[in-house]
Image (cartoon, rainbow, N blue to C red):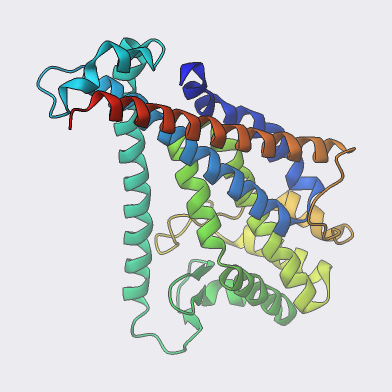
Length: 309
């Protein structure tokens, strides 16, 4: 394996430039899918490498249930600095597992609680709640539901209400909650992926904004609806909101809607700054996958040879 086993732990740094440039230079749909894919690949690779290091570190602990051959010098020689890195990977992997499990549990708990609260409300896809707190969100699950309070609807004009519902329907139709959950889990697995999580939260909202503008046919109306909803809503999300919901930086979203619509391109030219950043992130993800695969195969062969039949 050599030092290649450590590369997936730091290669997420190669995605930082694209996390910033993709927000403004790529179509929100392309940016969301690209950033989520890169984050998931790099998170899986870094977690796999932590697991490989943990195997070596666990095999050296007294009283471990692993085969004795796994602590032989040949096995330890397959991992550089095995005594330090192997044992440090054990608590690191435990922290990653606990953080991801907590995120999944919180997401599931809040979503279930919201579904139970809406069980008796009329309407199949839209639930209007008599509440003095302004809020609106898309609740995934099944066909999904749009939840909005009467306080928020009272503060919007009819055209702005249509824009609001179009925005939330876009979230449900594109299943943005899956992108958000994947980005949050990736950031839990590797802290270097946090900029990608922040970017995905913004691009997913921008994606819904552009879909709403296409449905309504007026970008300025959607911008007004977003601005008013932000001014009316409380600074912190309502307790019924899904755990991974986010609005992103509203002023930037409004400014983007007041500008011309972005061009939908699947892949930018390599001779631009965003193109170089995209290719750099793709190369980092590829090298990360190759390094983790090489380390996994190497360690498997070494452990297989060291394990008696």
